[in-house]
Amino acid sequence: MFMSEYYHSLDTKGRLIIPQKFREQLGNEFILSRGLDHCLYIYTQEEWEKFIEKLSTLPELSNANGRKLNRFFIAGSIQCEVDKQGRVLIPASLREFASLEKEVVLAGVGKRIEVWNKNAWEDYNNFDDVEGIASSLEAFNI
Amino acid sequence: MFMSEYYHSLDTKGRLIIPQKFREQLGNEFILSRGLDHCLYIYTQEEWEKFIEKLSTLPELSNANGRKLNRFFIAGSIQCEVDKQGRVLIPASLREFASLEKEVVLAGVGKRIEVWNKNAWEDYNNFDDVEGIASSLEAFNI
DNA sequence: ATGATAATATTCACTCATAAACATTTCGCT
DNA sequence: AGCGAAATGTTTATGAGTGAATATTATCAT
Image 1 (cartoon, chains in turn cyan, yellow, brown, green):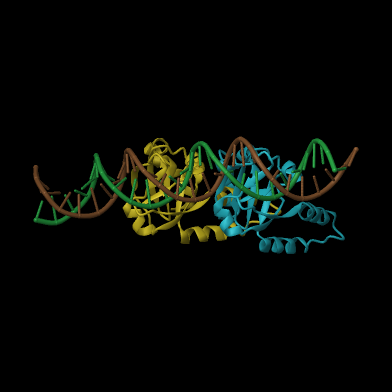
Image 2 (cartoon, protein in one colour):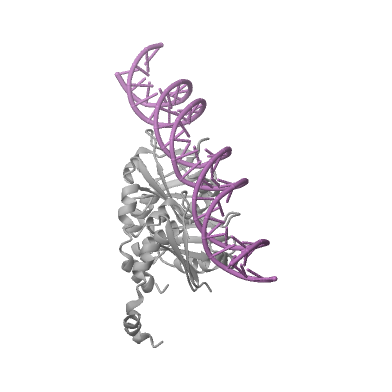
């Protein structure tokens, strides 16, 4: 599983170095897609297919939200290959979607990796909200 | 179970010597993660997996809190291996999260070990009011 | 107490991942 | 064809991470 967070930076061409630790698990090819909360998701080929499988169980024909989610994830995804230096080019449209400029965070979250604008990540993870977290744990019975 | 507290120090690279007593129980590999109250948690591999098991039952696609908890704990954790001298490197992001600089306290708390900034630990642990706290837990009938 | 041993702390040196700068190629457009 | 922009590739620097060596402190047995 993917875990830990890494602070990296985009070069002037919008390329991102994938942390060594992640590359070992990912291999050279993976899927980059739009993610929830305005970050990007990175999936292995395999996990991506599982994810799409689940998405496809949503009622598309009858349900507008189902269609919307499918478009969000599937149209917003791209197959990537890391170059010899361990970098990938993040397309401009995805960079814009996630407000990536220079400083980014790569966060391992189980089956996927997430790419965040550094400031957005730090705002989101305002962990002074400890009680909130603790009470969530309680609510979920953990 | 883990118990007792130890006062140790980080070296200039942010490495921490795990007390011998803890190492005997922990083994060479364990998980270091963000914890509540701005300290770090150390779990055995085994305990960690139990915890992840629970976390993984949370709905992610449909629930914002589920995502938040996963991000907090999984992105905030790392698999560690102690080196031949009994040390582990604490990544900069976790050091910052727990305000670890030089003097730290390692505290055994049952199933986990906690790592605290020494001053934070001493402030938090003024036990003047333990009796008051204990009485607030009356409802649990312990 | 005293010395022997183990545990912790500190320092130094080196490697390799990341960052940054620069060069080349590809491709669309006029 | 010739130009410019984007994509791809190469090279060099920097510094975090790692390992080894040494110094200091604590622990224990005699």
